[in-house]
Image (cartoon, rainbow, N blue to C red):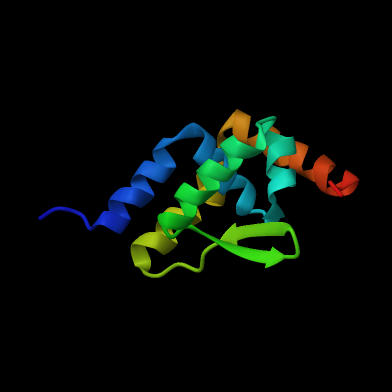
Length: 114
């Protein structure tokens, strides 16, 4: 029996390095696009494209506030989703590049992007 499209999409989301970095950052809390851009050192179109993919996969939600868009991890819709997202902190904090992103995020949050 094949996996449902949403599970396929979730695995594909986790399989891309940039999207994995974004998910790991969002595990730390809600972020605006400018925060993610600052940490990744990536242009807005690239970050927005990956956020759109993550939203279609059901992994992130967006909250609009004027011209700003704030992203956060979506509330898990089932056990599979919950366990997959649980790996963001439990398993992936040991990855050096993701630890560096988390440290950079702390500095970005102190500075702010507005």
